[in-house]
Image (cartoon, rainbow, N blue to C red; front, side):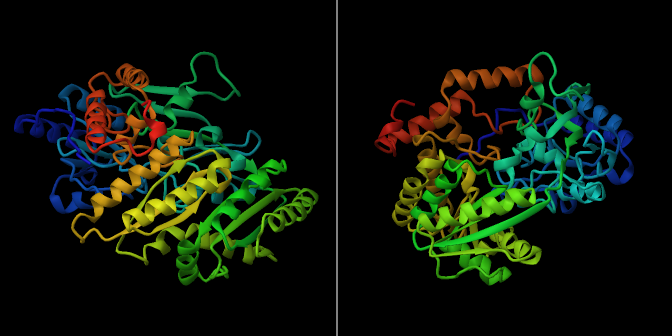
Length: 497
């Protein structure tokens, strides 16, 4: 994957000096990092395959400082990459060598909780889980729960439109926020969204959510809170065949039941998680489904019976219901710790994130198993089965020559497979650096031109997170040529792109 930057002249030493002098006047002394040792922690996000050092890191503490920093960068033509906790998985916070890394880590205050309105106003550096912890005394919580929820911050959740285990029933970040405050590259503060349920004009809140730091820098978020369900219970089902487990997912949804969470793990992931967490998973199963039902007592009781019946009819070899809260937490802990657990199986892994129509799940899993054999790279699957959001983890060793390249190629094939069955190349991690070539497969030049026009409207100089998320048409032409050059496209039904 060639990561050629957008053609930009390096900054002159005068510009660099002017930048540093001006930043010293804007932020406190400990808010500017320039020596190489201090820059290293910022060289990558959760996608560690790509690393770059920024020119410098700036850590403002006030909104007015962010405005001044962006205004300054706009005047001096300096690129800016905003960063939260750095838990992202698509390289969205990868720094730019000729630009600044703007960290929002110090914006970590919960500004206001309104239990009557069921909202909380928070700064972008507040951790996802900290919101639920703060509002728990009011019997409320914040629904989206990415696996990284103990570490990831709300600003990054908005930038990536993060999902999580419970997004099947409760929606993604975009469905759980009401208002944001954003600073443009010109240093102007915009309030987007409002306190009403809907506002007139274009839905800029939805546009900003998932815009991956390319349209503005988020400095405040008003999140919606939900009352804690009266009861939540989880059912674990084991299968001797991953396709049967895929079929069961469709059957549950078809029965009109929307679980709070519906997750699937395959054999590799089950064994890794079990060795790591000891959640009590059946080690010999080819797949397990975790189905959480929440709501009122009566509702949950009725649904548990129905779901158990569906799972058995779908061929489950074993169905267990968590007996108490401790067992429910253990079942989920295995799932939430699956990513780090898989890290014990190989020196490196590459986490993909594609989404497919639920009904195509069995055939996509079969096709992925074939690709895994073809590339001689094991794939562990852990995913949000309920909404068809796959997270294949390709296991590899970066120290073996050519293996990262083979892994990236296999990852690309998996994403193209998702598009071929009517899906998309990302569910929640965003495009960042990682999937930029696959954007060329999913979107046609006209659509990409529209994306660029939106970018142009907010950031005409292309200083915010340059080179991420939306490929240039030039890049797509190169990617297309590269594909055709290697013979026919991997999936004949994709020929029309």
